[in-house]
Image (tube, rainbow, N blue to C red; front, side):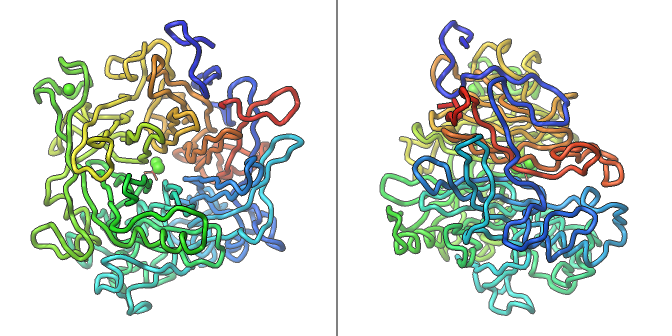
Length: 604
Ligand code: FEO
Ligand code: CA
Ligand code: CA
Ligand code: CA
């Protein structure tokens, strides 16, 4: 294939784009193969029951792959990438799609306990067949389920503080479970970070407390949708006011040690964490970037006090697993360089031809020292949104995944959408968030001063302003728009080994008739901005993950069939099992077919 200006496609992006479609299957480019790696309910341990939709139990679910897979990581266990540890987040449960005849007003205890066991994370060993190239799960000593019953250790400035103490845990250091794990990251020391995102929806009876700190996190109302508070008092704020403070953290898991206790890191602040992605500074300190995924929320970074210790030894890993315990948390303030009157909300480029400017990282807390007037360090860690409000951070259009380019150090921020921008009583357009009623989102490039992640100032510009390329309010890095794929609502981002950016979308049908998909785009060279759709996911699904390696691409197909009015009694998708089956969230592998042999992905 030849690019717009007549030069070859950049390495790793040599495929014919998949056209927008509404098919109930995963569509990949010609010349590529796909297989389902693992589905909701697949057994992970010897003796675990096979999935049985109509007779599911909590005991079975705790030993099977969970629901609604979001982030995925693949940690190779050999040089040829034929075996690896697949680590997957299970963000949330959709009871209407999990149970026939589900009575939302009166869930049963068994249904609720199934949901607890279907949340969390999975670690599973996968092996690539040298015969057909497919990636398959195998039983191994590494296989593990983390659920809402798994003990976590709390670390950092808020650990052991009064705000984290409950009747079940008077120490404030031990929490059962993790929930709403959305995106994540792989650390340079081989552990997994995972963001607890929309934890607010699980806690009942906030209105009885009338605490503005709760409403700032969207913890409001009386009964919850899932009614868990009927079955465990920790989900009832009237009985356990602090349990909610024990969620909304970045958690760290060492998948190489199946007996390890996962950690909640309070030094990284508490908000609706989408992810945390780590970069090592020249002096060895590590920087973790994280977004708060809600309309008008903020972008954060954490800088460790201690230095990264390279190497695979147990001692090195033990040391590195303490790096996120102590450091400084910052929030971003963005400034535009164009006159504010040129940012009119339409998405039209200002007269300098770019949405761009500078910014600064505002310190919030460092160890036990608070930089925010009227708040202790513990309060800044637990009520980080309130701290960021006080220092006038910049309200962004739903900060989702953030990822540093492995060679240039530029940070890519997916800003998913914000249909509230410009509405009465809401903030209007700003240069980094230049559209009102922003349905399709943008991707921002952030360059730390002197390419040093320890810097407290940066430059930024919008790389993509997403949507229909035929519409005047879209921008694709300056590339001719008649050659790019339509894209809406960037969510998860990843880099391939060549430094191309890959974007998974969660648009909820924002472009009519377009299922969500995975897109590849060069960020450098003459093809910068030449965005191409690599695959699409089935009806009602969101594309997550992704992992883009030399050998294989992995995507998580989250919530297939989740469309208005759909239920297990009226399914909107039959993927992946076909026929009249129920939809099952699953992980899919895609690789290039090469003359009957095990080729690499062909992206390499
Ligand atoms: Fe769970 Fe922000 O997507
Ligand atoms: Ca500008
Ligand atoms: Ca996400
Ligand atoms: Ca999302």
